[in-house]
Length: 205
Image (cartoon, rainbow, N blue to C red; front, side, top):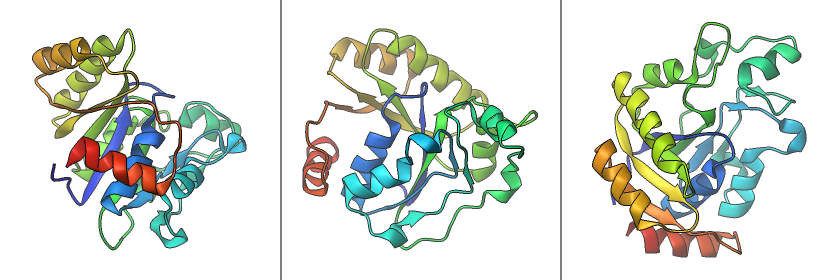
């Protein structure tokens, strides 16, 4: 598969494995990584996980614009810190080679009291990759996410299902969503650069 030089990764919800998939793609594409809004920083940073799992050098991890302490929706986490997220301050960094941008939670999370994440993504004019957990309920959640992306006229690269494979989920999402399921990524017991590069070749080459 040919991946674009820069794309946005969203999920059907929070905790669906976006960061794992970003690490897999970063290792396989030899890409840089940027998460502009990080909630729940007290529990650790997703950028640190991606750097460790994918073996990315420090210069390949782009600094986040907003690092928020509490594991809440970005607008609430920012409010608790006495700040307001300004989407106009989040500019795509210049990198050598591909850049993967990871969102916070799902595509419809609020950034502030006026702006949803999807509003900011729309301004980027980037293709969107959807990560969904391969479990009961994924068909509904994937189709809802696909629908709102189309409503905003955003380009959908495809869907990656994360978890135990289920062909029924693939068939339903592709049939009703009219979007390709690019891979079903099985759980990985060992997350390291060599393993991720090998898995990338297995799924995408």
